[in-house]
Length: 346
Ligand code: NAP
Ligand code: ZN
Ligand code: ZN
View (spheres, rainbow, N blue to C red):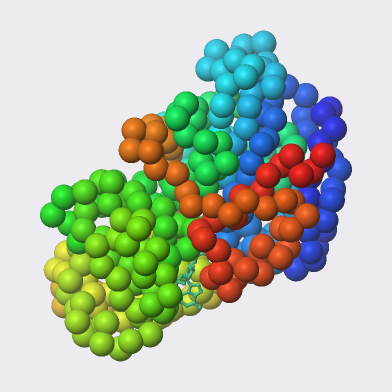
């Protein structure tokens, strides 16, 4: 077994604290990643505080991992020692079900998420707020040479979570796309939708992030605190990417869709929100959801970002500051993703 240092929550809502544990010895197809950086996703906070229910403790959060391959199993063909790699939201899937066979492994019923989940053999998974991780080579991604490992870490969750639905629902030239919530996911949504050629509008709680939104690639910006926003933009968008982590009145946002428009939920609040059929029927609208993306899409997204020089806007922190960072994420006070420098663990 491999001695590993990390940070964990021992029970729901407990502050994260130093935690020593063991990773498995490498199997034939495993890669040992020396973790250099890990992004702080709002999902880490939801789960460490058990806001979705069913959290498994002790919990080492973290699923926006970048690092260097330190060792490979005897049968590994995809990677060699020294390669720059990433690991995202899941580390294995059953490989047998319809979803796995059709390249939609993120929707596998037995998906092994990177933490707060179980490996296929039942072992609890522990995430990327740690100095190393052992992952099957099929679930490890290649990082393009021109992208820095720290600002690339958030692409492994925030990036793919926006890229996959933007591509699936055809964001591109001639399409009007709204991004609701300019946080970790939202700011990647703006960069990616802009690079895909769509006309991008940010809908934020206040006007405070207007200049940032323009710099990130947004064409328009409105405050949702102003009721006029909802009359002005009625039936305006082809696609709305809702990244908000808190409960909102979805009915009000659905009114902003054109005929045949779609609002995709990627934000996952801790409460159910009632939606009226009357919000959908008059304009044949769709309300949809989407979870991260497939392995194929993840590599495609990383290569797209390499080509367009897209990374996350980050604030680097030491692991000792992670609890304070959580509080700032909750206050929507981060520009636009915290990334932990794992050298601070040593
Ligand atoms: P984040 O950085 O905290 O961003 C969320 C943004 O939502 C904030 O920046 C804020 O934007 C807005 N917001 C927050 N509280 C609000 C409130 N009370 N009312 C209105 N707007 C509010 O979080 P994130 O890491 O981007 O994650 C966002 C959500 O996506 C979380 O629920 C997370 O669990 C979920 N998620 C889902 C997937 C998936 O696969 N579907 C993947 C990763 C994360 P403004 O200040 O601009 O209003
Ligand atoms: Zn995430
Ligand atoms: Zn499966």
